[in-house]
Image (tube, rainbow, N blue to C red; front, side, top):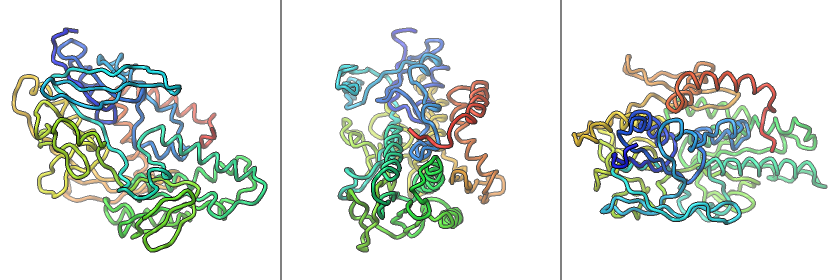
Length: 438
């Protein structure tokens, strides 16, 4: 590869960042027309909408993790392990902090990477709004490691209850999920199934109907506030039938070691608390050499996805506040938005490299789907041909939900590889337990 070729650096290997690095590597990196480098502080990639299933134990993370190094080798880009901590826009360099292993030994030293074009695809982090105790006692679902940590705590709680001398105490096996968006709602349904599956593996001292309590808390008047009301009503009805307690118009004022306190003075005893109530951009984005951010720390970009104060720096996905003509709010932080923005930037990159004007990004809302695990899937698809959306549920909705992940896999691996992997996993699943028990 030519050393003087245009260097495109992508920071963040989430859905949008990894798809973009893969496609640019295949297009430009293969023939040396440009150098592509992906930077991420993790070694592997997991599609973020799967995190609730990892937390519940219904999905084996190891079967879906993708090595950045391997993907870079297969698709002609470079991977650098590290966390971005700063930028010098005048020199066009980003700074990476040192990386340490679990024993505290340095893996990579602090370094800088020069770029010609920079793409920020850092995703989002949990926004706990400064709620007392949230950072200490609630588990966020931002990363696979956090999801796996919650799952270990869940299994440990069940083993502890099974082996202790006395009976199960009130709240000992309680789970409170703060935030009834798609992640929190899907997690509630998954937990209902997997907790009963865990008990079925011989934990006979636990009575699921009496000892296990799952509570979904939402500050808005209804669950799934960002989605159509019909989806919310159908979802709440199913959760209620399952025995999941749904508390709407309920504001959390404190998280403690023993549970969650609400603004009305009530207290929800619980062993585990998940916080999925809001997102914001990573804190350090506000310190990036004068780049503009909004009130939730997202990088403000133009309709071409270029940051407002530096056309050589792009942003996409959850970390970007992209205007949406005709709407008061920017493009929503969804996986489909990151996928569309990555595809748009891939198509526009040749024009950018030639110094030509870029076409604006246009977001198309293809609808919303909520998976309730083994019980149901509900959602709405945008009917562009008929000019309105239509409600779907059941098997068809479940297939559409699964197709979203398949689209992500196709972007990373191609059709042949995805078909073979799907077949292999279907055959291997028969030998696995229904839930992850370790």
